[in-house]
Image (cartoon, rainbow, N blue to C red; front, side, top):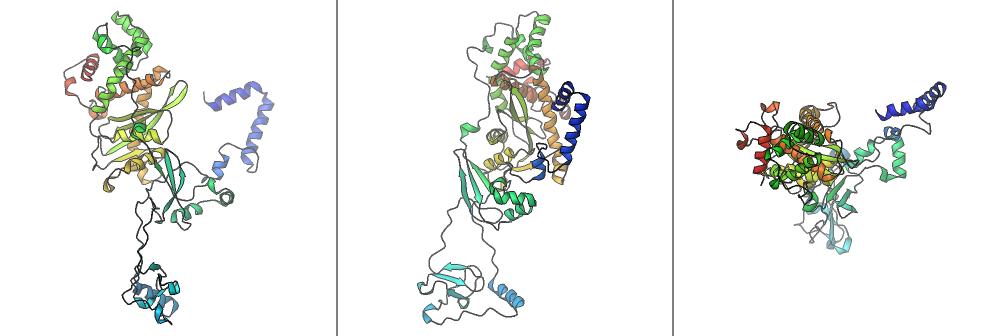
Length: 485
């Protein structure tokens, strides 16, 4: 039952018919009265759609200052004469000491010395052009900017706004930046009033977040190394066929550990508990993870990513998946306790690990802003002509041409999430991270190397020649395990 249904049932169980009618009347009045002190929790968001949310700018900053395209002085003189019906007269120096040398020209518009004068009098250090109104030094070259990044919209230097050991935020301070002007024009009158009193509540200026992540922080999640508490798969006392059957029922057929143990006892006459099945899975998962990453092969030009939730210890955790659009193989499966930037970087980094540095990659995701920051972080180390292209498909309807073109790719991973949920549903949640990671890892092994796909002519996404002549699924599992070490 949904939360709304539960609320309705509770109201009906606590109040009489007349009281329920009064409650409905009050709720209707609240929805109709815009000035009511009560209201839905999304009322403020509806009235102020531009209120600050975590939404990084997809446009990457510039690393070098842009050269302003200044007009030639002849064109400026012509335009001035057309507008004012008079020409710009040359500089008339009254003192011979203030005459500009003949070899001096304006570096901005190439105006000759007749239109240039000393802007600081007898100091004779700063010059100003009468045509373009720009200043420059006579002998001293322009000081090189120490800024690390520049605004991609106005070219203004970004200043360091906030610093954290994980991230540094840079911000554009130009009041005439086109980005800032556009954002201000989007504000409603009520939002403008709030923005004047609390300017930090609205994101108006361009910002860039630079992450300082170490390799160990963006490592792909992995199953635990088998310890003494977990069975050694190379010293199993039961027949090898039992291990293959356990993985077949538990992973391939998506049965619970208890049902798997029950089938092995009733159909095959071997003593087996559900804990034994879980121990088998954890032991094999450690070797299967290395096998998955080593044999996932190249990625397609288009990959699609998404995250889906699972429950570990009663709390929501998230599995980040990436799939190759054509091969349908899983290229990353990172498990984390949040939907932030660091898990997004870890999953995306693993997804593109086997791609060539000069390969053009397009990643299709949903509207989670963590993907934007992850791709910006990874693009720093890639050549300019081979940056990762990011496409966001947001919502359920195609509101633009981009969503209509890339919606089929997004639907691929949404259908995949249903398949994954079907395989983890019998577990009814997990007690620990290792159990969730073990089942996810073995599911990826089954999905990539064993599971037939209708779109691939009922063949698995990644072909292994050693499995061609093996007919039973449990025998294929045992063959894969023998290839893992």
